[in-house]
Amino acid sequence: MQNDEGQPSQSIHHIVYCSQAVQHMDKDALEQIIVTARHHNPRFGITGLLVFGSGIFFQWLEGPRDNVTSLFKIISADPRHSDVVLLTKEDEFRERLFPNWDMELVAAEDISAVLEDAMHEASDPKQKNTLSKMLLELHKSPLGK
Ligand SMILES: Cc1cc2nc3c(=O)[nH]c(=O)nc-3n(C[C@H](O)[C@H](O)[C@H](O)COP(=O)(O)O)c2cc1C
Image (cartoon, rainbow, N blue to C red; front, side, top):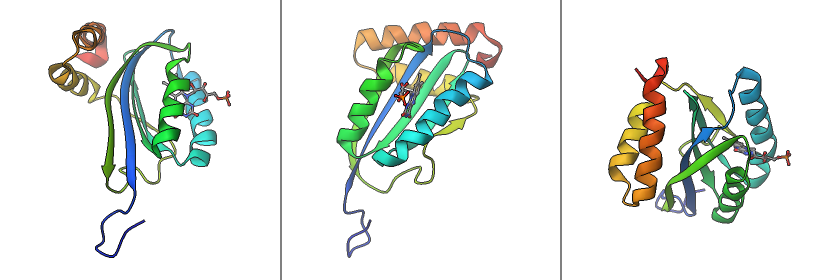
């Protein structure tokens, strides 16, 4: 939605987090998450993307603030992953970045760079520590090289 000046008239909330898969995630296991997301997210006005590689999830969720916050609580408690690190939580007056993606699974080539950036920017030592552990795991695997 836009106002008369062509600016978005509603603020959009987004949350970005990364986490570590608890078990091996094959294609079917990832598909299961995406199918659930695509079933629920449109009803709550949530769009975004999910990256998976080397045992690490990275997800961008955007939509109305209360809905994004509630979904993030549900996702954080999901036993399929642990070490959930909140990277960004922000309100912005802008259009959605991914208006057509109820939840898109994205290839993981760039995940290492994304985590390194996040680690350099994190101010909370606990976050830095978890991110550094994740990067170590990532670099042990072929995807991280
Ligand atoms: C990494 C990850 C990302 C997820 N992303 C979403 C999502 O975007 N939307 C969603 O509804 N559920 C998502 N889930 C699943 C939720 O944690 C939860 O299992 C689901 O919402 C429960 O739906 P149900 O009650 O219909 O089984 C995700 C789970 C994981 C592990």
